Image 1 (tube, one colour):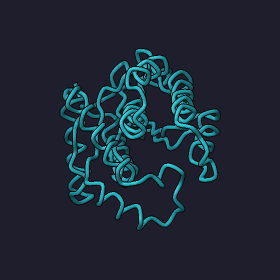
Image 2: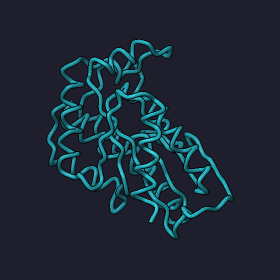
Image 3: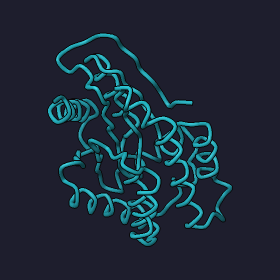
Length: 225
């Protein structure tokens, strides 16, 4: 059911609080989210936290089924509104079935994408009504908001170069044009400007090691209290 999960019983000064923390990763495709999520999960586990890694859409039986529909390259006739609603449905399921219960149990959750993705991709990328999207996001997540969001930012051209080097086949969302990706990146920029206390921009063009160390330091400093 879960994208990945790490458990530990070690303790240190960063011992888990009564309620867990929700850390989300955002960025255009090719920004390196999966790699950096793996690094952060390992580092936090070594620090004594119980870590659960999830992905959106997905993370539940229903969510993974929706994910298959959304990413199927043959679904080229999917309308933008259907896409929007499917993302919201998958998110509502994972929030109620997994995220809220695990946070209440003290687990720290790292989620590969969350509601910001819908605002950036469907709002700015697809240019759907931002007010409608805000209402759908609110319905899907309720009061469950990220404690911190790591935005991996890089030029679209660099992201496309990375995508071209991937061994896996492209999915439906990988087939978007440069203009779409530029609008999506601008969406993330607008979100970060609106919520600077939550969304932390990271330069994703730096080396994998340097970026991983910077992310871990930021998380420790901001969420260790």
